[in-house]
Length: 372
Image (tube, rainbow, N blue to C red):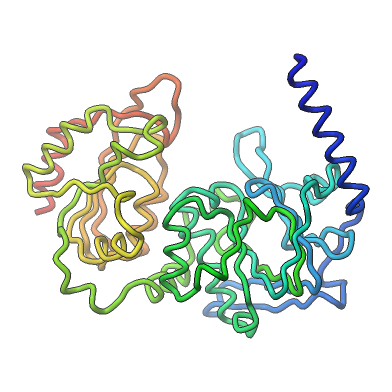
């Protein structure tokens, strides 16, 4: 370990030590159902999927906003709503043992902010912080679970994983949750409030996120459609055929179409419009997909918007050999006319869905023409 790293570790250890003196150690795990102060409500969707809601009076929360979030009552970690995501040897992410949570070893090393009122946590861990797909399916449906209980009316504030992306606030404004009721956990890592509420993860039902994402519950899709599709979208003048162009996307260093200009120009000549989703508001993305007849794009989070498309909409996903069936399965659930063009990985260092690919233009054109 070099001197700089040693110095950084030294100051971090001092910080953790001081905050443990101020706020005390977290040294016990509390089972929610065994504590009379914690209110637990069951929420069921069509008698198929059951979730739990947890309401913790005078609840405290500490989060690093990505891997670990601890729900705390007094000086005990409440097991059920807390999470601590860890990589397994096969690179799969799981919710680890409660004892692995950050707070047991390091305490709560941030100033505690007192919030007067009831706070509902939308924290989800992992990519839910800054990935559009995971925001749509891991974060927002938690509100759908909350709505089936009386605690929706009692909620004063919503604690968000982040507010750095414009869609994060826009999605909540669209369902009448004002900006004044939003709390950014990046600036509020350690809070205490009158009542702290959380619900089970809406799609990760078996502690296997990689598997769960392949089977988005039907109620989640239906709830998102009901919340965000408006009746007057039908008459809007929007492109019916478009290409999801990721050339300016923030993630192109990890996944891109090498001959993107050729693909874009070919599609424009075939009557498609090139669209960069990050240039659009969330509301306009919903409108765009709801009015579409034919959608083409590289494997990515923007395809979460397929839930807003009408049944029978034609979709072509451009994907690498290891992209998986996430978008295929979502398209099936939404009853879309889905096809996929699979290309070999064209990058030595990048793997799986992050591969760069070179699209066979003739193959793409032939597939498009076969769907007309």
